[in-house]
Length: 194
Image 1 (tube, rainbow, N blue to C red):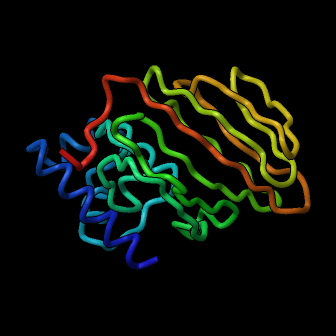
Image 2 (image 1 turned 90 degrees about the vertical axis):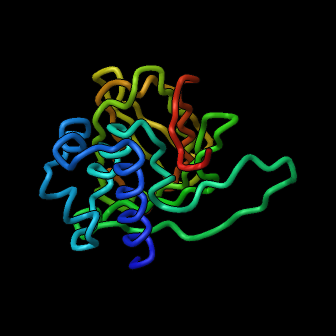
Image 3 (image 1 turned 45 degrees about the vertical axis):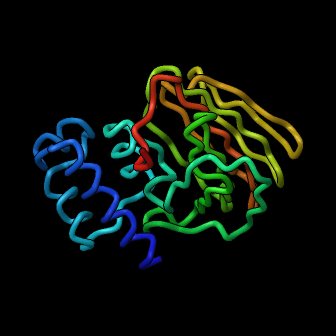
C-alpha cells in the first residue's frame, strides 16, 4: 500500500511539473482542493478512488497510471495476475486492480474490481467519449447509468457512456467481482510514456 501511495505522489508531481501547473491550477482543473493535492504530493494523504478519478480526469490521463508504471505497447503475449487493493480507509468495500493498465495504442485499460457486500460506489462523469464495458465475473451487482440502476448477474455485461454520473453497488451478502474495461476517446491521453 505504501508503494502505491508513493507512486501516486510521484505521478501527481510529475504530471503537474510537466504541464507547469501550480497547485492552484491543478486544483482548478481537477476539482480537488489545493491543500489535498499538496498532501497527496507530499505523501501525507492517500486519495480515495473517487478523488483519484477526479485527479486523473483533470489531468486527462488514465486512472491506472497512478497505480503502476505504464509501459509502451508490447506486441508479445502478456500474462498478468495480481490482487485487488483497497486504496483508502473510506474505500473499505471496494478493491481495484489494473489487470491491463492503460494501453496508449488501444486507448483502454482493464480493471478487476471487487465489490464487497453493501458496497455502493458512485463516480463523477469522465471525459466525453469515454465508454465503459462491465462484465460480472462473480456474484450479482447493479450499475447506475442513464439515471437508472441495472441489475447484472454472473456472465452478463453492460456497456454505457461514462461521461455521466454512474456507479456500481452490491446489495447481496457475497463479494461480487467485475471486469471493467474503460475505453477513452482517441484524442486522449497524456500518459507518462512519450
